[in-house]
Image (cartoon, rainbow, N blue to C red):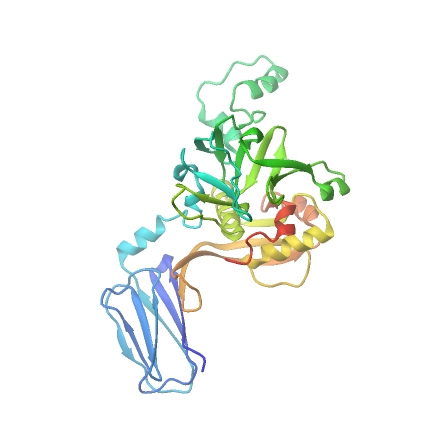
Length: 368
């Protein structure tokens, strides 16, 4: 017999939790819904079987209800949450961001290994980790600084952009023994990494030159190379803060979600086109089919247009382990020509380019 399923979603704007209960048979005189004493868990008793979940937030008061008999197998109701819970949830804007892989949680004893063979990718001499600023930091510095360098003409101004350290022409690069961290990757000097570099044949077939960073042991692609630097994607690594602890990793879905949330916060846009950095029909099909695990199963192999309807949503479900969870609610559709869409809607939509190897390797995309 199918078990009772419970779904609870936090409606933060109206400070309520909506609860939907699906029963395996019509409810009867013995069907009972109740809250725990601390008002943080909800249980349903039906046909002598008990099913319970932890709610996304504590509710205001105890609630015990015996449901009248009927023919339906679905129950729905709402519960008001505590005002303190509403404030706490509204301040958690970065819950989808994988904090365990930020620079703040990494130190001199941190070990970074290949996710596929557990071989160390980063050598011991890397002892300093720093978070990179947001993508548009260089442009915004012109607004934040009161005293900008004097420039006589446009040519001087353009040259000064790379020299002053914060202009649009400047860039931040890692140095020896120091690693830079952004939302989805680590930036290091290649000499500090246990990796090899090879040419990306698929990129060459599309007329673009790109070098791939591979694990020196298992040869699995883990990132891309830029000059003498290596960008290692976080979904290809395992990390631990101490050799005595177990390895920890993050799925690509969580990392992509965190990247989307950061783009929403910095640009105020909630519509995106997700596609690979180098477009190829076969690669695009692999990439998009994996990315769509964020949204559901779709048969078409086109690029995905995503509308983030609710960036931060909290829910609990008996069908999802380790509830409650923070997720994002989104709508999506496939688009045959993303370049044309981006040109027409440049002020309303942005793009998120993902590496080809994400689609080729199917890295960690089935465990979220």
